[in-house]
Length: 600
Image (cartoon, rainbow, N blue to C red; front, side):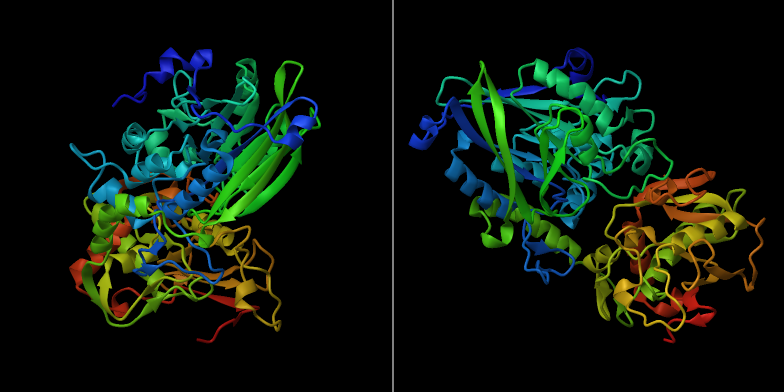
C-alpha cells in the first residue's frame, strides 16, 4: 500500500506546499461606523468543531433512542449543519471558514459499521457517512485526531480520498524521510470590499500519542513529533508565504495530565504551550480533551501578543466561533482583535438535508445493533463498577482470558496461568435481563480495542495493581464515604483504572498511594514475585496507554486484530445464555485499615 496517496510526501512538503483555495464570494461593504475609523477594515469568522466521533444524529445507538442528558445537550452533525447555515447567513458565506480538530471516524456503532462490517475499503464499498456529511456541510479543513488511526492507515487513506477537504497533520511525518505524510496546512483567500484579499492559513497538528496508542499500525511507517516543535517550523513558513492570519487546529488539549508516561518525550495536551512558545499564531481550535472552553487567552512569551483558544464540546454538541477583526495598515492586513464564543446545538433542529442524506446508512446501523445474540439471566450494570467488583466487568475479563488461553494452547506458553485486565469504561452501561443485543454489548465496551498477550511476573503484577489503585482518593477509616468523590477521575479517567482477574487482592484506600494493595493471592496462596503469568490486555494498555508499569516493555506473546467487543459478542452468541455463574467472581474489594468499605 502506498502511504502517500496524493504524492504529497516527496513532491511538495519540503518546499512548504499545502492546500490553497480562493474564496469566491465578495464580502459586504463596510458599515458607516467602520468607514469613519482610520484604515480599511474587514471582519470574518472561523467556525470550529472537534471530537465528533461519528455523531451524525442526536441518537444514542446504545439506548436505541434520542440522545439526552441531564444538561439538556444535543448531538450530531445534522445540528451543527443548521448552526453553520445560520452563521453563514449572518456573516456572509465568503467571510467564513469551517474547520475541525480531529477524531472523526471512530466512536459510534455508525463509524464501526463502515470500518469493519461494511468497510469503506472494500471493492465498491460505501462512502463513509462522516465524509458524506462533512462534504455536504462544506468543511474547509480537518486536522487528524489520534482515533483516525484506530482502523489502520488503509482505512484512513480511503476516508481521506472520499473527503472534499484536506486532512491536515503537520506533525504526522514519514518514518524514513520525516517529510509530512499529510498536508500540513490549508490556506484560503478571503475577498474583501477593499480589493485586498486576506490570506488565512490553518495549520493542522495531531497528537504524538498515536505512536503509542496505535503502534501496531504506525510503527516504522509514521512518526509524530511534538506540536510545539512542528508549529515552530511551520508558522514562520506560513507567514513568509503571505499568511495574514494563522490559525492552528490542534488535536491536543489546552493543558493537563498526560497518559504518555515516559513512552514519548512529548506533551499530550500542548495547545497552550504552542500559544505561549510559538510567535505568529492568532488563534487555536483545541481538541482531544473533551472539555468545553469558550475562550482562553494565552500570552505569547516572545511577542507579548494574546492568542485566543477555544474548545467546543465533543460529539457535535457545540460550535466554536472565532470572530476576527482586521485593519489594513502599512500595506498589510493586521489582526486587531479576536473573540471566541460557542453556540449550542440544543438550540436548533437537524438540517433536513443532512437527515435525508444519511438516513439510510443510519437505519442500516440501527438494525445491525439491535440484533439479538443471546439471553441474560439477570440484569448487569456498570453503575457501581468503579468501586465494587462488578460481574459485568468480570465478563470482559472472562472473554479475554478464554480467547488468550485458546490462542496459546499449542505454544510453549500453554502451561502459564492467564490473568486479564479490564476497565469500567462507562458508568451507565447495562445488559438487561432477557434478550441481549449487539448494542447492549457495544455499550459495555465502547472502544475499538484489540487483544494482546504479554508475559509478566508476580512482582510486575503487584506494581501494576499499585499503580491502578492510585485511582482512588485517600479516605481515612471512619470518614464518610461519598462514592462520587471516591476516585481521582479528573486526573485518572475511569478507563485508566483496571480490574485484574486471576488474582485476589484488597485495595486499602486509607493508605497512601503506593502502599494500598494488600493480601495479593494467586490460587489461594500469597503471590510469588517470581511467578510467571500471561497477561491479557487491550492494545491501548499493551502499547503504554495510561502509563501502567512494565506492560509496554513486557514480551509480547500473541496479538490479534479482532476487536474485543466482537469477541464478547461471539462468546455470548456461543453460550446463548448469559449467566453470571459462568464468569462472575469477587477478585478485589476496597478496604480501610483492613475493614471492607462496602459490605454488599
